[in-house]
View (cartoon, rainbow, N blue to C red):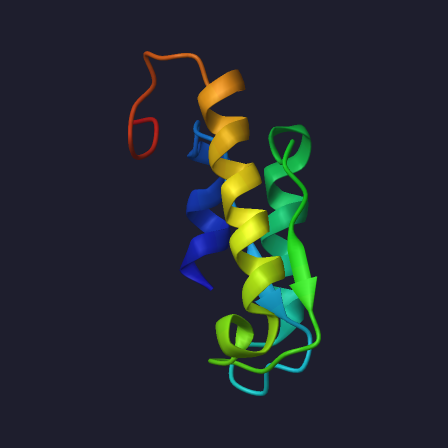
Length: 88
């Protein structure tokens, strides 16, 4: 998983949402990313009992509320300037 190799260099808040019943990308991939973020994973991941492409239709209100809170979090604690992508 290339994301695991790059995630330690990410310097912006990270939002991870994953379905626990995903049969395409195992939930362990999301858990591995969260673990690789360490203390920078200040915003908790959202895990819902959903598959690969059905989080929004099956958990829409929860998903939207989570995204809203994440955006509020980033607006309040992610003080600019920060790079949009990753550290070199």
